[in-house]
Length: 178
Image (cartoon, rainbow, N blue to C red):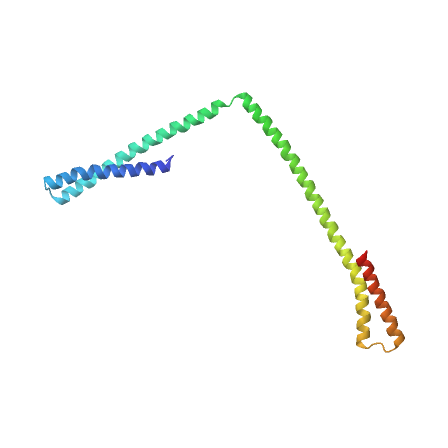
């Protein structure tokens, strides 16, 4: 089955031919000669199957041969039209395409490497900024928590802690402005 779609078409055409080939004489015999009904049905069935088989075989053979010839002609016309110069030109085109693809590949690899470097720089930069911001924040937080917990009652020490807290805030302001 080289062309299954056309084999289905052959079968459908054969089926139609078989049905009409059997119905026409059977209806003639049935209406005019009035034979035994079982004999007529059996003979009709055998005739139908024989006509179906032969018409399907003939149609599928002829359709497949016709399509094979057309495909072969098309293949031969394509194959013979390619000359050595066109093959040479095709090879040159393929070489040019390969060079361009290799260059594009190396360019993309360089871009990927550059993006990886930028990502590493970004991660390191954010890590450094986070560290620089955390140090004064923890200092401020520690002093304020100590004052809130009432751990210090001496006014001089409270003033000293508030100055250190102010220094931490100034340091944060300096980091943010920088």
